[in-house]
Image (cartoon, rainbow over all chains, first blue to last red; front, side):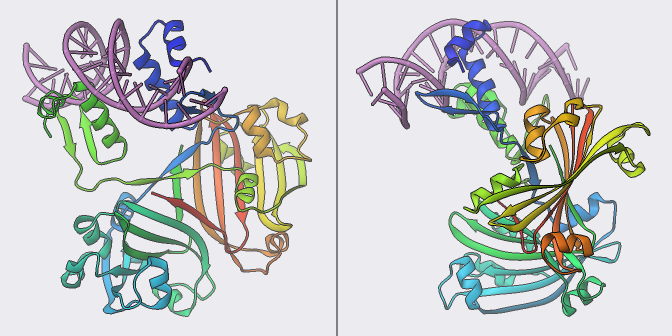
Length: 203
Length: 203
DNA sequence: TAGTGGTCTAGACCACTTT
DNA sequence: AAGTGGTCTAGACCACTAC
């Protein structure tokens, strides 16, 4: 494509205006920009949608349903091996393990299982998680700056089926999320949604 | 928060610089801006990750696997009722129905079932879909401007299990996508991924 | 080293929204 | 009516990078 200066002449406007327009086109994935080599139109525009990080409570309430939270289990332990690998913790790292349920109109909405790196958030050991989920607590106390998210489909085992009020083998969508605060691992969470739940987004 | 003018004074910089900084913070969901009422810091920052619209081929190749495409079925018909509702087509609207498979290193990767509104893309009736999928064809011939995406977990029925080389009842992740071009419905696609497939993204 | 985009300045006018 | 953000201009200097 022409340079910013050329486009500014062609359209009788300032270069700053052209720059902003091209920068936004680049953000949206239509063009690629490189210093010295210029701006190129992409052959395959890389479109992308936004995927919101919402609290279970927010999702439930946005469906005009009544939200209820329940703490299932809470304990402090040494990080198991798989988790130490996942979060890159020392072998003797201590974690807070929380299991809790989110309900929509009193029907199971999401089972949340979460491991929190106590070293990164010492206060969490004294946090009251009986009324609100660990996610809400963390958002205020230790907002993440980096995250990795994965969605996959799983088949309910007996325990999970009981929590979700369904039968063994039912397909459910699961979200796994690892978060960091400035390269310090914060938490690993596995959230399983009720059967039929869909993650939706728009472009 | 202070107004742009005040911040510009405080930091000894131009208002345009403050404006750009605040605009970017707003894009990232940290603040809300309204004319006249000013800029407010959000209580619950609405973080969001990018979700790429990739071709099956791109995903397979990014895993360093060998991509293969196969057309399973292709036919033109009047739009069935459920599809006319989904796409908001007239009852006698004609659609091209395509079923195809994407393979990674010769193992089933994705089953794609797609219905294309012929009225919106007349050329598609003569498109050669034997070598490349309808998605690739559409991206060049009729790029969408609006889309809705949903992910859910499904349980394989007999036919799907055969295509995916698995057993009935296996959980798989399914992506449904409806796209428009300037308010004109283009296509509805249902893409089912092989068991164990995860959708990943970062923040 | 030359050319490109990245960023900034100082000033101006406008559009929207609340009061 | 007033105050805020939204956008633009004209000009400047800088940082990166392909040559």
